[in-house]
Length: 420
Image 1 (cartoon, helix red, strand yellow):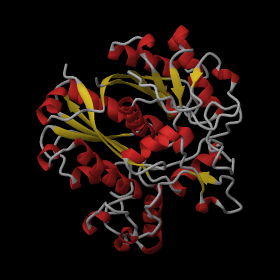
Image 2 (cartoon, helix red, strand yellow):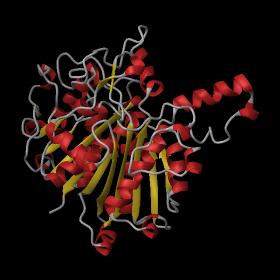
Image 3 (cartoon, one colour):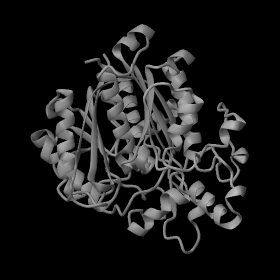
């Protein structure tokens, strides 16, 4: 089976809008949380979010959005974009340049795109309300493709002339890791030579605030401590948005183009909890099975894993479940392998999270470091026996594991290896 490599990355995130800035934030543990102005009304119990910086997408008309340099989007393209599709478009431009792809490399029968996003609740709600208020005839004709869950792949496939396989994935916070896994399969099975993997979310009031009614968001008003995975005081996640684009290519394409990859994707695995529509299995059953399957697919043992980017979102139940799963799978190796949750820095990107954090792992493998898990004042006893990094270590990992979990108990894990 063909080997698969990560050859390009693009980031629009709360901790940076390019790879260099993101890597610096990870190394120095700089977070992207702020007191979020739209949440400051007295009837909103949540005060902190981790928004994308420099972009302004609050205006109803996309032509009034502020898009920072060096990005440019044609006026006719803006009409079908949601904020998350805009972020994805800019991250896509980054990834193309980073991977040194030509227009012919991007648009051909052997290059595809798999994407994940929840759509744009704000634009969908505005569209439906306008239908009710003024009638269908006075609605923008592209509102539907700018709002429903497929908006990211609709726009990217059309605007970048993608001719290979394309589809979207919807498994909540596991979505973009599912996209990555199935994109890997397309390449490993010889169906495609190159795949773009995209995760994107609006990260605004309409995307984040509905989680407040689930008691899933942190009510902590302090940006310095609101997102604190593995801490005894954690009380929910901080929402974020943005986009990450990953370029996957076969070994033949890497050699043909003469590029140096970030990392090799060794394999992936998935499993379901079969437990609850919204809450992780208390013992991490599905996540443990997904990790085992990923390790088996990658043909590596727990003893060979150096670093784990945990899904840990800073919720009391979810973090505890993952800690139990890690001890179950890694056994005596659990005290050695380094573990951190970069959501302490970025917040939780929902369907974006898996692609974003896989991108972080690729940066860590290339850069020779392991990012720390920020904001821990008192480690939860449920983490006993695990090597939770409290600070970034300038130690080069060789093989890393990235975990993602979503509603319905969907668990997906990916194994990456350094290129030497």
